[in-house]
Image 1 (cartoon, rainbow, N blue to C red):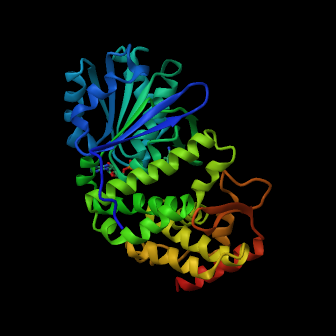
Image 2: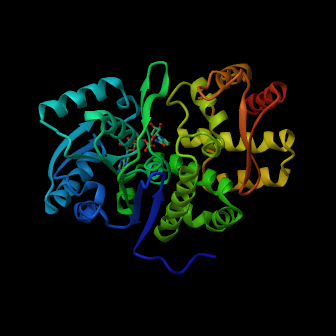
Image 3: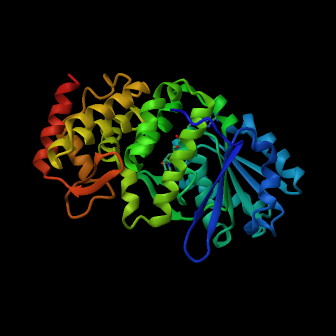
Length: 379
Ligand SMILES: NC(=O)c1ccc[n+]([C@@H]2O[C@H](COP(=O)([O-])OP(=O)(O)OC[C@H]3O[C@@H](n4cnc5c(N)ncnc54)[C@H](O)[C@@H]3O)[C@@H](O)[C@H]2O)c1
């Protein structure tokens, strides 16, 4: 059943320790009032200068509207843009931005506004957290993945040649504004990345969210706006609850890794970019769900149902030939080299039922058998 009532905008609040908190606002057409909204954020009350950071796809579409909205509320703005894509989360770009900030005379009385997907959000957050030992930043996420996942929680990062997200900080935004209209221009190939995270959130969150997802899968696949809006709010509410309980990833935040142990290994072994992140996460959820039947005695029917949910969102696009060369032993080695692995053992997040998850070390031989099954299924 679909909820009939949908307010024009939805407000969520992240309340952290030491009196820190910030709001997330979700709705359609919010960008036009972005400046006025920032004006009422008390953490930004003394700020008159905004640095807008975007990328080469999103900037040309929305930077003008964002800047006009900021000007209308009395902010002066400077726009910086990076090339679209993961390669922009680099030390070189962070360095260039620091130098450009210095040249433009960007002082402490500045808010950094991230206008883009997770790449822009992670980079902008990192630069904001380091510029003059930290200036406030705001997220205006433009991709579904950024709206449901990366824009909240305060993880910022850049990549190194040695691996993704190796340098970064925990640094919370002062405000997050999700304007659903921005999704109208999101390329089809990018939807899977956000949808896979949505499915993950529903499985880990609760029977209520999970059943809602099963019932609304078709409408979500068709990107029907009211259902999409609800899905984003539900996913944000879930992520907010996790972040509030575990800001610095000391425990509960580990549940966000559901499906990602296998997904990261697959992305590494296939070669970065060969398999999309959403596609890899869908495969990772299928793998974890199947492995859970033997590792923790999860019901087989639940694994089948999770696969059906992913299937209904068209997340199982063909993998071959991108993974035809990937061997079980390489996948296992990649899992072992993940930065989250400790003491040479691989930990999996498993769901035994919607809303019931656990993170556990798994017998290496059991993992290897399931990796072999997976490899054989790709032939
Ligand atoms: N900080 C966190 O907690 C967290 C969580 C998950 C992922 N991430 C990071 O997020 C990144 C992935 O995010 P992403 O999937 O948004 O990638 P992205 O930022 O590269 O965006 C994907 C592509 O879509 C384009 N795009 C985005 N919004 C658009 C729009 N509205 N219209 C047209 N084009 C648009 C971008 O230009 C880019 O080409 C990764 O670097 C990942 O590590 C961070």
